[in-house]
Amino acid sequence: MAKNLTKRSEDYSKWYNELVINADLAENSGVRGCMVIKPYGFSIWEKMQAELDRMFKETGHQNAYFPLFIPKSYFSKEASHVDGFAKECAIVTHYRLREDGKGGVEVDPDAKLEEELIVRPTSETIIWDTYRKWINNGKLNKIIGLDNFLYCDYTNGTSEVFDHFRLKHKDKKFKFYKGEYRYHRFSGLNYQLISNCNNLMRGDALIISLPFSSTCDIHKYEETMITCEKLDIPVLVDCALFGTCNAIIFNFNYTCIEQIAFSLSKTFPISQLRVGIRFSRIYEPDGISANNKANYINRVGALVGNSLMENFSSDYIYNKYQEKQKQICRELGLEPTNCVTFALGDNEWSFLQRDGLYNRACLSERLIED
Image (tube, rainbow, N blue to C red):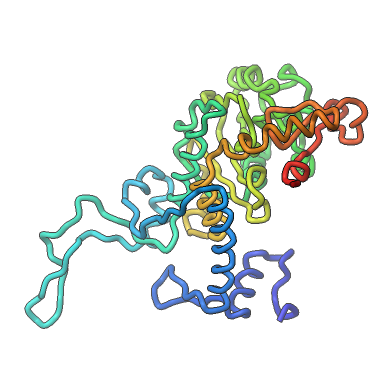
């Protein structure tokens, strides 16, 4: 069967759809937007569900279930998506039928709902709402200004957000601090690695991580945002390490910040599911928004990510492993960082050097050892 499939490297979406059909996992139903999950497909889902259920219950957590009906107000909060959803939703307006006098039934006009309900097999608005609450409800870090970013989109991790931000500002010169996430260097764009905010100029664009990728602290964040405000430099804040950190102030109250990207890949062992979200200050008319409007997203990733956020707070990973992080650092002569999965080393660890400045060691594998 594999020989007859589109190559995954050429067209991932087409490959996935062909795989589902040819493996007899699922098929379209007579109701638009719904699928019939066939025995093979349902068996896979049962195994995934059973494993997740075991993991959740081992921590003392309980399951939750979301309603099929979604209040219309949920969609109104995400105003950018209403137009795209208009032809893709079933809407419940009344709660009762009555006989029509002709042997059939009709809607009872006196049974109109106070608020219309949307019916969807899955809904991105659920994960948007869950993600925002998951971020804001943490106790270890301080979140300022996230509620000013009203537009939310499900994304394939943070890298998809980076790519679209670079496309949006392709005519600008991108600046990254030395020690930033190395993915940015492979974009092929005109960019420069900088040491401080004095290297920023009008006409630039900036992607900055918070916590900072190499040191897991706020680095030069506040002074950089002030400079970007003065020079009208558009900024994307990369918060991929949120969910692993402590004592970080996430201050998004700067108008230069256009977008904020979060991901669950560093918090939970689901990096290949690509569960991310983009918060935008204004509606972004790009491919990410278009895919979200069409409900063309990774539903498995959204479902798993939503379940994890419902069962584990954004403080869970740090609280669980902080003492073990300190223990490992004492054994290896490392300095713990604000992110529980990372530590900094001296010259003995120079083989991990990032731009000649930071020797960052990843502790993930050691943390989960018995």
